[in-house]
Image 1 (tube, rainbow over the protein chains, first blue to last red):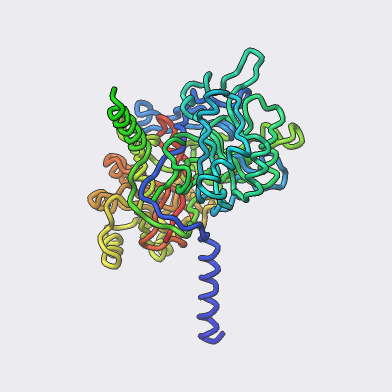
Image 2 (image 1 turned 180 degrees about the horizontal axis):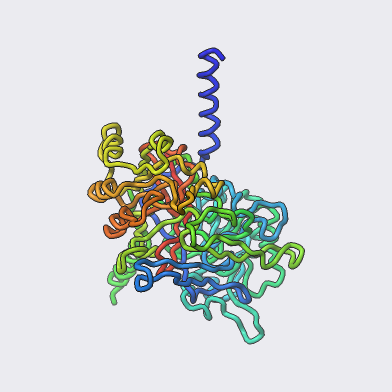
Length: 257
Length: 257
């Protein structure tokens, strides 16, 4: 190879390498952060019949001079992300969610007053339209989060799961129509501060189906949503990249200018 | 209460609530992201004698029409953070690391050429000083990361752990003196792309002791460090906030302007 060919080859190789390694994201600036993650512990609420989070000490200060634990958890315990592969074979898995969909503008739709009147409340298309009339069209490639106020119950499993004597759970969710509307708007994913995107009484998980079929992810059990503005935050979704996983735990921050 | 008193009370309450919920961080801007996390899977390298990562399918598309897993892992498998409580009783636990220490300026010290010549290489105080002579003093409240190049071996456990016939591991780490120097510089934490901050042959974990005693955290098994500039990136360390945990898995991004 001539020197110039060598230089070109090296330059090209370098640009390929760096191009693969870094991903363009929607530009933002930040000077404050809000933690949207519930602390994880053995008494955390979890989906009935599922696998709770458990921490076991393997070595202690007394036994070995340091501390070391083992963790066991269902992939859906605590603040976590559902990948499209959770319901739809062949759709994106939890380790394949594009980075520019994990670091993205976040908007919050507050329906707390409606949930206070009805714990089974389903966020409606009209709720989304009402938000849009104030703040403009839901941005494409954003994370839309429903603030139902339910996150304040997380440290009381019984109230959070809210199961009645017929084993029916009662907590709020998204309506299927609202899910369809948000898919049309081109969101990257949606989130909620309850155990599930579909409200407690759901047996068909219709909103799950709509979102996951459309290759959109879902975030469940989000915390601290009252601190996030309706528009203007950037979410960083630090979900564990588990090969072949369909859901995984995530540390999530909202960053604001 | 008078109306004006009520308004003041509500305003004060709101400002207290938001002040508690949001944390000031060192301001930054971002338009690109780099993933510093190794994908997690059952064949991942782990500390000899420790608990490997394991994923078990509880429900499959065939058995239940959806996919659901259980995860088991030692708290130190994969890309993870050691909290000061890992070694030092009473120091910060993994759920207590301040947010402004998890979102912070990141600097990278590249010692790959030295590691190529010696797999047991220990980053020296002189290596830090050499970095400082080029880029200025190590910033206070930053994350300092050693790029040893070892991250490229992660998908080959045998090469990554690199144990000899006497059961001694061989991989690079930080010297104790460099740890002490970085504590003096006031860093928030340090990171590396190997199984441990202390190099493979260490039996005393001297750098662990120096850092964790000083209430500084450590990040181990970092990925993709060649893509991060020596200075100018912001790290977002999405570590799982496990109550009473002394280490935990993390999704880590480097953000660049």
